[in-house]
Image (tube, rainbow, N blue to C red; front, top):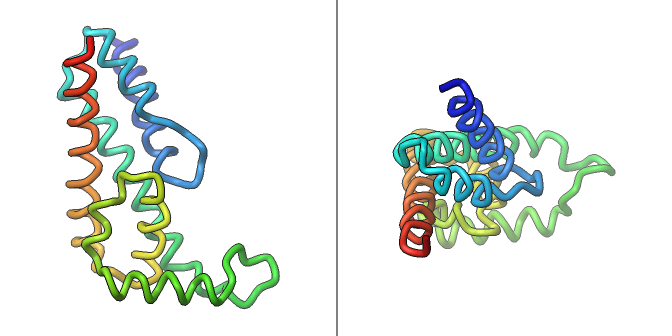
Length: 145
């Protein structure tokens, strides 16, 4: 019982980290827990999804506050890169958040914060994308093993 809960909390933390700039891969832990077959897949998907969604929420918050510092020497993005990201987001809009599960999705969630995307719409679209991703991983894993 406790080991299952600790495993799920570990998955939550890895999924949270994987949604940020940290070099984590949550799918490895997700598949390992799914293959253990002693935790219902609903809970595996739920803990991974919520952790990943909240990690994207941290990116959103970082995007909201990052512009305060864009004139500083240590700022990691040039003004040209920031403007290019703004223009790209203006062109494609909030629907790009449905790609937040993809490898460059973390950057999209930061840009959404910079662009002051409605927070409820942000969490709705990111929640859909992240949860569907884990459902697909679970289905592929189930089919393969």
